[in-house]
Image (cartoon, rainbow, N blue to C red; front, top):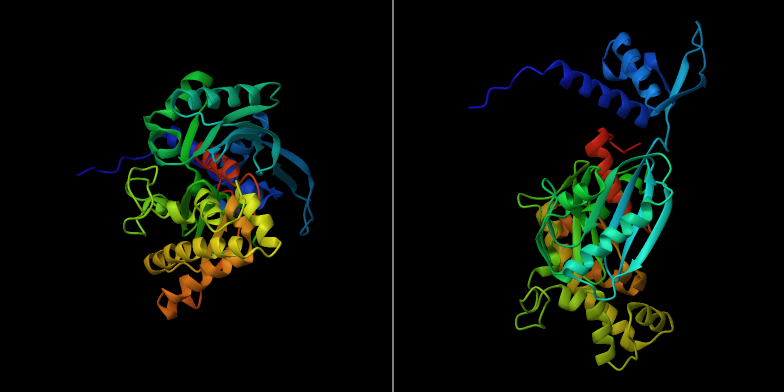
Length: 388
């Protein structure tokens, strides 16, 4: 049996540092006395931590607040650009990278086309993306957050399997740490996007639970339970794209047949629309035809939506989560696709559960994976809750 050891002086100082910084982030502008009240720390401890944060450029005094009878308190605030994170989204047809500050504001972004690169060539493209983002970078770099398709061991930064990039047991976290000498956090892209929607989605009445389903070249879900990202015992929670939904269905990149991706992903929708007579090569072609009232585009969108609705029904039955968010390139198909998802999910769920479920588009329309990967890195390195 492991007996808990008493915290060392260093561990206590680190805990207090993170607690004060998190309080400043969540409640600032705030005074030293208010931080002491909110955290339960002594005023002396708070004053010592704040002095260190000011010296480190993380915090600044911004003036005096209202007086309650005595001397007006000095207010403190986090310096949003005191640290930056490089966030990477390694998915779809391009790799996207951005320099992000502590409030999730994108200061600079770069997009590089994948052009069919996979394996070692795709890894070199990641290196190039980071190199370009580091040029003329101002401020202190906190680290690199990566969102990538596949099953990711986020403890070690190892990509256990990313089908579309042909990466298997790739120690991406260690490779990036060794090359750029900064902390690195690697997570599944759908899981990162779910955290971005939960953290930066701007809903003041945020519920504690959320499922965000990303639909593009692949299909994956991210699950937030009680305000924390749920990754599962093997970090593969939400890998719904490679569950078989059609016996003897089309071949999938994973080597099996009839996976959800073969009927509900962007390429699957384009292929079905073409089979129905529509001249289309991208999901945007299907979207434009759908807006114009094309019957083939409508049938293809509804067909894919119904299969995704079945997956939603399974998730509702497993987790009883009321807020389901859809995002990614396919989400641009809009209401006909969404209605098919809702109808099928309702039809295949327990009515008592289904009546409380809302399936909606994501509020964050761009950079959701970049922001989520950045948020994970900030949480790990600074202890920020990133929730206001």
